[in-house]
Length: 421
Image (tube, rainbow, N blue to C red; front, side, top):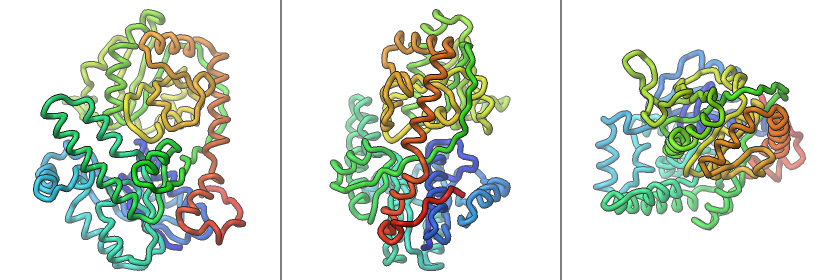
């Protein structure tokens, strides 16, 4: 079986949630004996170094690492591309969700790949890449098309519209309706849909009447036993994604003052991609995140030392869909988590067992203080996090689901579960 994988964002090593998801799916696909080769068509707004591409090729020998094609993932950081998307929206009614992926360069490069050889499966690594679904159907009519969804995208647009007022709300609601129609059409047109959580799978059923299969994020780990009674916390996430930004604004403005009242020496380190650099190559920090004890690190290529020096991770997320990769990464690194209800959404966790979930600023701060200063509590949360990963995010479960998406479940029902390459 030969696959073409349309990936929305190159990342090796992965620094953002979407990149983590793509690499996890590639690892599962590579582990299946029936999959011979995977050609990955990468989009990227950052230059991918030869070292990064070579590292991925070594990790996944079945993957052909093609040179990424430049395309702006965060459109408004590249304003010269905005007029084209606006023209598609105004003249042709193409929703932003789809139009932002349109590019003559990308289209011609995908066409070359589709004409180059036959593929058994074309895997769309995000809803936006379905902009090229008609091209795939035309040039690879026999290929099975699989869509792997990271979020219920129309839900995110609906959340955005509800936060607007006046004319902005009317415009946002119109965009939500367009996005919803696009998502429904794509869900119904592809041959199989992978969802990142049971919540999302139910949403796709209600939205488009399709039965999506939940592909768990595969998370490997080694157990760690370190505990540290110290008021030191970390935050890791994409620092331009609206649910993260809103969550950090809330935490820094409403929760952090309570934390410092309880623990005057408490510190928080914020790491993630997306912030622009200032004149001294330091990240430009939003004013809401500037407070005593808070340090914004920006992009941190190696997160291991940050996790190791943190007694807990805070994950204040407000809105969004899908699964918070930051929670799974915290579990993998043995770091206890305090989050919000939206942060825990999509994961079958029990508040008080694997994580603590709080929506009130004072209650969040109290929980922060208790976790930071109790090594016993940290050990309990760490053990529960490892148990959760073992039960819900192992390779074997993901392999079985991916086989059903590929249409090979029956032929390979008795095949042994292989280790990820």
